[in-house]
Image (cartoon, rainbow, N blue to C red):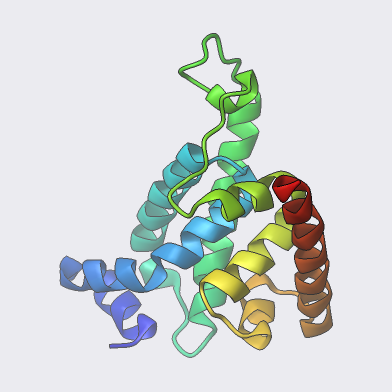
Length: 172
């Protein structure tokens, strides 16, 4: 079943296809949110917000348009909203935000993702994760993020070059 069909069912109030929809989109939404927020826990919060927004607004999705771009835009907007509200918060102990106190741990995707979050810009990280981890083509990424294909290619190459330099430094 396609994402459009899942969205149509969700719009009609049929939640039976949510699990399949979630499994098909969770990596996309996570990597977009992680690229914006740079923190695993916040990215997971943004994912939850994005899924609630997607289900609530499934009826507003125009059939035949780019479903991945629509989903990606919602994920990015929810991550930006969370980033804005998190910027107004002040951590008071090392348990709440360990990264601010020098105790950051790599997430489930390992050390390479942790290095990528540290050395890449939000845009580079998002493109790298969508291309290298999720396997999307540059054309698909361009459509999802609403940017030209050459920009996707440039960001991908920049991200790879930065990662090579950073990983050489990690080995030394």
